[in-house]
Length: 460
Image (cartoon, rainbow, N blue to C red; front, side, top):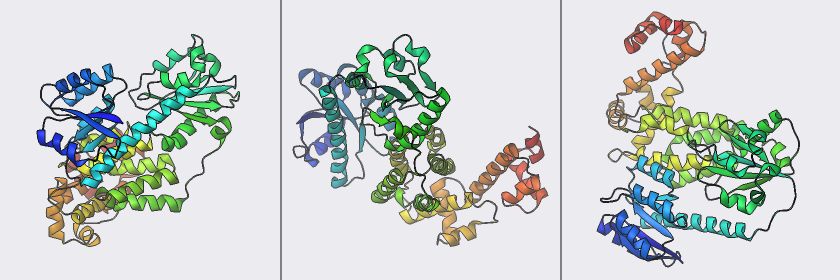
C-alpha cells in the first residue's frame, strides 16, 4: 500500500481530501498532512512517503520549492499537484520540475475527483512495474542493436546521451537536429550494453531510449530519414510519459505508416471545430483517443490545431492566450498535446456566459478565419450560429475582450500581411482573398490598421 501525505495551507482542503477519497480502496494510506512544504519535509524525515499531494501556493515554503527538495533528496517519491483551474502556468512549471500529474480542486464532482486520483495511482503502478521488470532482466546477448535517444522536452540536455558512450562514440554517433541521437551498441560503455541498466540510467524526464534490433548498415542519410519518420509519425503517437523506453525491429523502422484517408481526417477536423470538447470531458477524451487511434498525418493535423491556437491569441480576456502559440512549439508528442489541451479547455470556459454561447463564439471565430475571402459580416455569422446579432455582439465582447469587427479586421490584416510577405500575388488579388473587392479601399484600410501601404510592406 502506498503511503501518502497531503500538503495544503487550507485546513478544510486537507481534511476534505482526506475524507472524500476512498484511499484504502485505492491502495493508499494517508499517513500525514502539512500546511506548507517545510512541515512536509520534516514529516518525510520521520517516515517513508511514496506519494506527496501538494498545493503550489503556500506560505513559508511553496509547492515548487517542495517539489525541488523532494526530487533532490527523495528520488523514489512521487509528486502530484493539487491546484485550481486558474493555475495554468503553475501546473506547467510543476510538471517541468518533476510532478507526474495534477488534480483540480475546484468545480469537480466526487466521481471525477476519484478518477483523477485513480489516474495518478495507475501511472505510478505502471512505472513501478516497469522498474521491477528491468531489474529482472538478464544481461543481453550479442544480438546487434542500436540505440536511438529522442528528447522528451525542448530543454533536454544534449550532452547527457554522450555520457553513455565510449570516447569514440561521440564521433560515430549520428545527431539529428531536434529529433535525437543514434548510436550502435558497440559504441556504448560496456555496462550500458545491458538494456536494463541502460533504461535505469536514463533521465526519462529529458530523454526516451528506443532500442532498435536487427540493425542494418545503411548510409547516414538513409538512417536519418528513417529515424525522423519514426520519431515524427509513429513515436509521436506511441509516446507515454510513464514508459521508460521502447523497442522496435529495423524492419518496422523501414515500414511506412499507413496514411489516414481524407474522410477520416475530415471527421477529426469536424469534431475539433465543434468545440463541444471544451465543456464535455467525454467528448474531449473521445477526440484525443480517436486521434491517437487513427493517427492522422502529423504535420497536417498539428498545423490545423496550431491555426486554431493562433486564433485564440485574440482573447484579450485570457491573459496567457498570447503565450499559447509559443507553448505549442514545446509539445513534442500527442500525449503532451492532450495534457496541454486539457488545461487550455478550462481557460476557454466562461463562468458568466452559457456553454452554448461560448461554443458558438468559438465556432464563429473559426468560421470567419477560414473564410476571409467572403464578405461575411456579423449578421451572417449570428445567423449561422443561431444567435441574435445584438446578443452576439454583446457576448462576443464579454467573452473575447474585443469587438467582433475588431477581431475580423485583425484577421484580415494578418492574412494580407502574410500574403504580401510570402507571395508575389498582385495587391488586388490579396485584397480579394481578404474580403475586399476594391483595391484602393483595401490599401486605405490596410494603412489605417498598420500605418503602412501594402506596396511598402512588399518592398520590405
